[in-house]
Image (tube, rainbow, N blue to C red; front, side, top):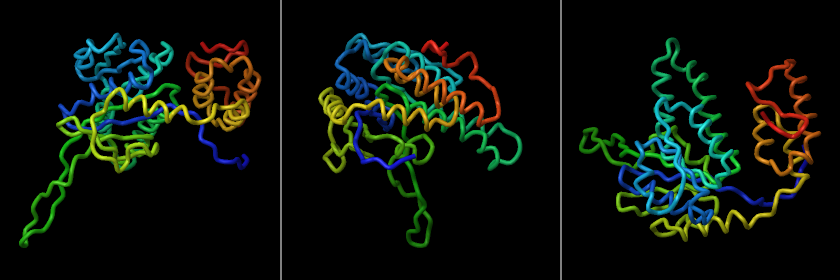
Length: 290
């Protein structure tokens, strides 16, 4: 643990598009994705919307992974892993609303104390979010929204009042992303969350390939990660899944850092007082995972 001068590293964008049905989330995501990588074959759509991604096949030869029920966090994470291993550069998750609805239903079906049961549901949701944030790919997530209301007093009566659109997702999820756009029924987008500084406070706009290219330029303006950075991140891993995730993110550096990965793996096992291994996965001294 040590202090270091702040320095923005090159990044992979983690972006959310939220809007009602018909607001153009899928189409806008595809245009953004092409702007991010300039190669349709390096784009994959994890489609939970009844093959809606196939409707835009005329745009280019992007790949589609059709995900059917049950829409558990674990199945989403497996789909992300498949895309990463296929060498995809941009993953569109269309949509992640079903993941949250699955967890809501799972919580409702659990016996016992409702508050205590959230302690079993929340870690699954958090693991899903971390899988997105730690992915070596650009990721665009779409989320459905619905009209939200509050009760206001008027003339001595409580009446419902529209307060805008609310995503069908856990409260505050949009703040996990680097960039979040709200789309209206006319396909216009405004930034509700923007750490890039490119869009916040700007007039509504259509999302295009040029928008994606602008975001790509921002992502590449940082400095490359150095070996010192990776060495520090290895030592900061506290669990085997966390270490494996980091290992899979840097295939080009596995041979260089295989000794440090193995050393940290042994340290984690000793500190946990267990020799539990990841199911069917491990970091091998020869620099491969299997």
